[in-house]
Each structure stands twice: as structure tokens, then as C-alpha cells.
Length: 367
Image (cartoon, rainbow, N blue to C red; front, side, top):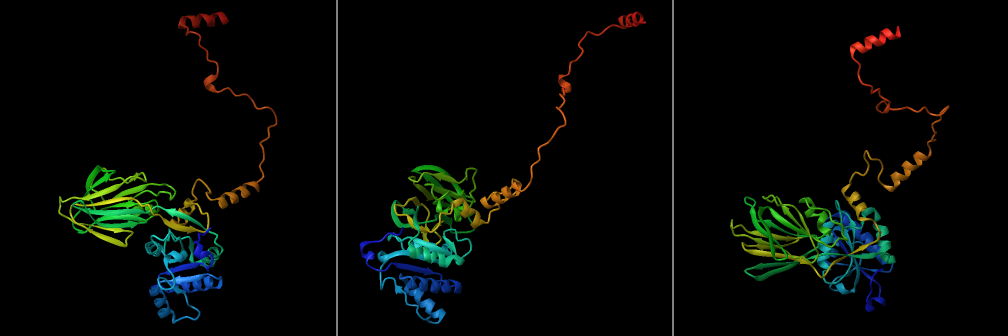
């Protein structure tokens, strides 16, 4: 169920609607969602720039009068954020509501949309679930990222999916030392290193060859990108560990830190990047109890039927019904089955061999 503050209990719930205003289908979905929320007695809230873009592209639609965030209300007055777009839109929304504990629910208008709760065709059902408050909130681990140069902190940022350290110069490798809990683990030349959460294990880390980690698993991932070393396997460490990368001066190459592909920090030689679990998770609202394995199959379009037979529950039920429709006939026998002694167990004559003279004498005696 949604959380409310004492101030919210006496007023209509406010829902932040975030959309990709560069796409016409996203603008259409935002107009529909805002109208459905308003008709149900909830208050749609949008960013000022999104309102302006929608009015410009949609021709100032009638009855489109959402509240403006930062003018009519603040983040702390929001009950929920409805994101209309792909995973990039969700990451943008997570950055916007950071620090407010506002949960987000996403409707996928992009390609994979792994962070989305539903698809475009389920927009009405999603809004109805928001109105009814029939959702639960999952807390997803995030990362706190610190950049140090000569021991001094020069940048602090965060990430939901991953923090990646990559080379700036495409012509040369980046030389780094990887450490876990202040213990140097390995040094190598590479194109970069991805440090990810379980949520981010299906994003950049997955493309770099990392494992898929269930969201309920508390862990941090480290995945090298094209590392020139034998020990270049992905690592999975505990949630309380600290991952660190030192940019070496061996080649005098600089690097760049990317957080969720949105926030970036330049890394000079001898820069150090430290990544640890954040005390502030990202809150995602879930309307259904879809298993993560089922989400994997659907989002990545994984084959689930092969020579071993049906896999899904529906396919198993169909196979069982087909088997039940076939009459089983037990074999019948006219009499008892004969006992067959395998050749290997048949009695063997083991009398000693006779000489030719003894055989000749035995023949005379029989005649």
C-alpha cells in the first residue's frame, strides 16, 4: 500500500507524471494518464519544461492543467511517480526524486524496458492500480561513488545501475588496479571496468559479460571490459564491501567515470574511484507479483521450449491434457512368460579335455 504523510491524508494524492517529450507516443500517453488521474480524483504533477513541450507539440490540449513541480508542490508532497518511457526515463526519474523516498512505477514505451512494470497497452490498468493503491514498493540497492585525486575528494555521485570507469582515448588502453576492501586484487590494461548493482546486472554489466543477479540478492558486481589479462573474470562481492579502481600513470592516460550513463567525472592519472552500497535505495512500485525469472524470459525473449518438452505452466497443462486424451493399453500375454536364461549364465561343460587315444577307445567301446 502507498505511504502517506499526515499532510497528505487530508488532501488529494499527487502523482508526478514524467514522460519522454521527444516522442509523440509518449506525449499521447502522458495526456491520457493525466486525464485518467484527474478523473479519479488524484492530482497530476509535471515538470515545467514537460508541460511546455506537451502544449507546444499537442497544440495546448483542452483540460490539460497539471500542477507544476516546484511551483504548486514539492517532491515531499508526492505520493508516487509515473514514468512513461524506457529505462533511460526511469533513470532520469530516479535522479529527480533522489532523497525524497518517492516510489516510481514505469510504463515501457522504449525497447527492452527492464525497469518498467508494464507495457503501453497496460496504461489504463496501471493507472487504475495507482488510484486503488494496489501496489507494493521494492527497494533497490544503489551505489555511492567517490572520486579522489591525491587523497582529496573531488567528486561525489551515485548510481542505480552501474558506475563504469572507461578510457578517454580510444587508441590506448586504460591501466588500472582493482581493489576490494583496501586489498589490491589485480592490475590490467582494459577498455574499462563496470561496477554494478543487482538491478544493473541486466544492463551495461550484462553486455560486458557479467552474470545476471536476482534483485533480492545483496551483492556488488565488478566486470572488466576487454581486459588484457588471464584474471579478467567478473567478480561478485558482498554488499558491505568497497570496490576501488586506481588509474595508473604507466601510460599517462586519463579515464572517465560514468554513472548510469548520465553523470560523468573526468579521471586524471592517479585518480581513485571508490564504490560502495548506498544507504539510500531507489524505490520501485510493483503492481504485480511477476517472478524475476519470468521477467527475464519476457524481456529478453528467451526460448523456453526445446527437445526436453514444454516449460511454462500453460504448456505443461496442455501436454497433460493431451496425454489424458490418449487411451493407455496394458500389454496382455496368453500364458506365463517363458524363463529365458541368458547365454552368459547357461551351464558350461567344464570336463577336462580327452586325448585322441581315449576318444578312439571310447568309440570302439560304443560300437
